[in-house]
Length: 182
Length: 130
Image (tube, rainbow over all chains, first blue to last red; front, side):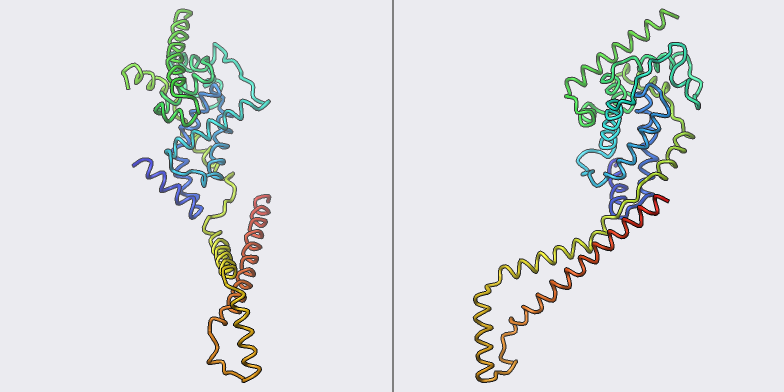
């Protein structure tokens, strides 16, 4: 039902170039896509905003390429994933290590006041490696299935399971060591 | 989903909360930046013309021209010798000029359609640059 509604909007965009229909799709998926980038960029709001913009503009331009073989969200996340991969490959990208005292969310201008537990989790997820972070974000935060993650990232199902398990263990270790330090 | 997984999902959602105001601003920014995209229906006349041209050309190709040439020669000789009336003509012969006119008209239409689309693109680009 959820997907058929998306397909209806996509059809309207395709046939009548309907910007309102695309707006509906954006309203639905923009927060999720932006949150995905926030995790990947370690809380960098400006970069996340830029990447979100790029993703939706690419989706608008290439919506004719959506064949309905997967859900619209999977197709959109695939664009987001590729956009992020291109971004990391570009020379401009440099991973800035997270300051232990201040999380990336705190650095941002519109930062909600995070509690200690949430702050620790933000820090911990930023310390995972890229593949683990992608899989953890898509599986836990965006609640996608292994099959969907496979379609988005192109990683084999076995590897995704391994990244998830390793990511979970690493998160636990980081959180525990942080707790001890405090 | 296992209980442990559910807890992690909830914790992550709390750690990366939604920022509705910023998301709204971003949405407006994206809307402003969306490039003009031509509707697929705008290409329909061009597509139909192309199909019609392919149809006409195929018809011309499958026509048995040697038979037609003989027929035209026969009619011409008969007309010159005996002055036959138009009523006795095979009306299939009228298909030829009709086909030729149709092809010319379709070609003209297609070129016009293509030029219109191109002009629209240029206009949109100019408007965007402003």
